[in-house]
Image (cartoon, rainbow, N blue to C red; front, side, top):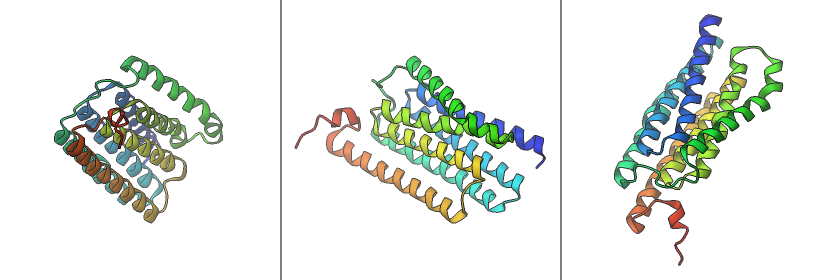
Amino acid sequence: MTETLFAQTVAAATGLLLLTAILQVWRRSTEASARLLALQGLALAVLVGAIGLADGAFELVAVAGLVLALKAVALPWALTRTIARSGNRGEDSPRVNPVSGLLAAAALATLAYAVSRPLLALDSGPATHAVPAGLTLVLVGFLVLLTRHQAVSQVIGFLVLDNGIATVAFLTAGGVPLVVELGVLLDVVLVVFILRILSARLELAHGEVDLHELRELRD
């Protein structure tokens, strides 16, 4: 892969990662959020594949295939099934409205770029200059976790956070050893499927998966 093509691919992939993260804050529909998560997984897979091809690290190309299968297909599918089963297709009363959420996301993006300035000064490569986008994903993932009530929405926030951590790792260090990456991916899959089962149990027992409402429950 040529340097120009690599730079363009990194810019396109991280731009799509950033766009899907910002849209997660704006959209209230959990179904739309699951589709955005699938698109985000696709962008992350493209980014990992590009880094692998540019560095000649074919184990990263294999990881890109796993990222595509798990983060762009399996996890969004599991979330979509959970949403369809629960019937809760959106956030009725998030802690912040969409406009305030977008303003908060813009502030977090600015913070990510400010924090990354010392790192950007050390390397002028396209991968390093895309690190602020990964940090923004991490911060936006925390924002979604803090401002949503629905259990599925919080799972989506957790996955955005995980995608941000993975993005920063791949951009700064070319990823981590294959065995470690496989372990992390399997852990994320396990967490999501456990949360899916717990959400189904909560709905069956209480008819509700809104965590704000469940806090009112007492023994």
